[in-house]
Length: 224
Ligand code: CDP
Image (cartoon, rainbow, N blue to C red; front, side, top):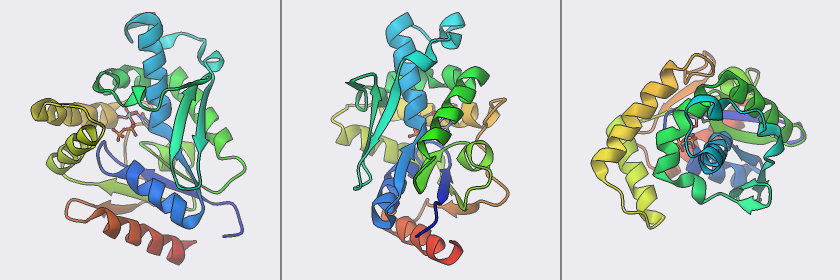
């Protein structure tokens, strides 16, 4: 690919966006940007600094100073930092997922994150995953994918992910959390999860990870 391109991958929690985007990035020489990790990092910072995401703490105005960055490697891996601290593992905690809704609802925080993400995509061809990449962050993306799967399958995938990270999780609480996050993500006033009109809908409930990756690579070849 010679010209700079943007691929937007949106969808609900556990639909496979990040693991799939990583592999597509590595195979197609794109930079992978994990927008959810930015919301997770802000949530981690607010909890760490204020102990809670409620009230004014969620709307504090030092976001520009906390120094959120991502480090991308050509194999598709991404690390998220706050200042010099690598928070990539810390932000995967269940406590972050349970508190992220309040942070992601804030219009000021969303505006801050969108500007930051557009800056990261300024120079390179990118694949970015999230909830509002194809609708708000890059409405003119070259290719938009909307990944979906049943809530049960998404909960099972998330449980497997937590176990691979060595975390012992309660299945029922993970299922409840997926349902709660679906409701938060689809009902927020700004940047709600919604399929862009021109996004290609992929239901991955019965597909393997490799099948989804192949399909996206095929779409890149056909469309770009
Ligand atoms: O990996 P998972 O699908 O669980 O979520 P994520 O991509 O890490 O994003 C975590 C949360 O951040 C989502 O549930 C959204 O509430 C929020 N988010 C958002 O509001 N907008 C984005 N572009 C990406 C994430």
